[in-house]
Length: 417
Image (cartoon, rainbow, N blue to C red; front, side, top):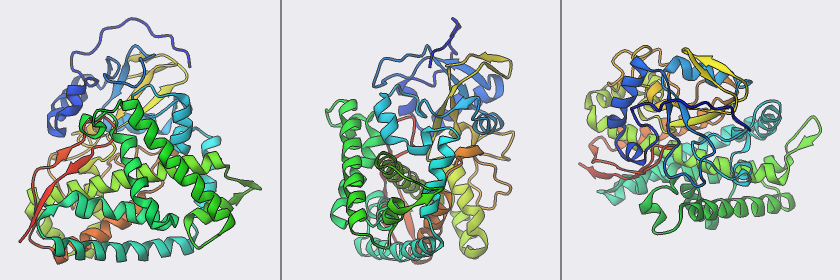
């Protein structure tokens, strides 16, 4: 898309530098708080460290909760079809990796409807039972292991297990798929890249996921079973079925979105309970009655997906700022979930917070997170097990992934009693 950008001064507060994203969420919040208060729509340099030379002169930062919701719902102005991350990424990678996340209606509507048709009531019931059993077995393993890395022993296991069990993916393929899913969001982290070029990490990860997904889809066409992949290859709406490219892209999306977001929410909600033991006690007093509002607070507090980008398709004005067609706006969910205009005492972890108008699943509209109920089911199951069976669990300081998209925890030590 072409742009009619005009020369303007960049904001003095950086949200595009690598050093900004290497800082902690608390350190970044100092910048977001000032922007929310004084400059809710601000112009910044292109992101440092992109895979390709930026075609944009800069990005517009959207930091207030209300504005994030407005942009999210107006897909006819703020488009997802040109990519949703802050980096310039080759078109072939966008097409292969984003599925309906990177589409606008009507194409988005058609694909989402087809995918939804694969989640039959029978499949949903089966998934819920699987998650309960998985959570129990994971905590069995934690108790056997004792002091360990919580991410490796708990957080990483449940989402991977859930997603690939639901898909019916063979056990021998799951570790490779999960590792590739990590690479899709961690290519900018030097420790993860381990000397490889970021583009190589991303491309290798994508090729691995697509190969696994497409080969498995072909296998399920010939050998159907009672799983989600079989439902996907057989799903039909208005005489249409998913193409191989659509199935491959959805497998990539499900692997990345299903693994990373829930994993990091489990890790950092557990850290919150260590930091706010009164909230852990409060939840244990009435787990069934309070877990629903608690999960919403987990998602607000953690904000596992920190940003999403939209491309403006026609000139628009926000808070007196003229934004031209072709320019990028970036939704900073991390900031929207600490907005003082919406949340009382936003820096307190409060499992009884209600209402809780967080944007952790997106700001509404057609791109509201399709997997939100699956994530909530996983969070309910794992915290039921952790809080009741490991009451003395404590965790140390997390080691974070460097990146602007997912708030990723690489490791976090834990002790038991």
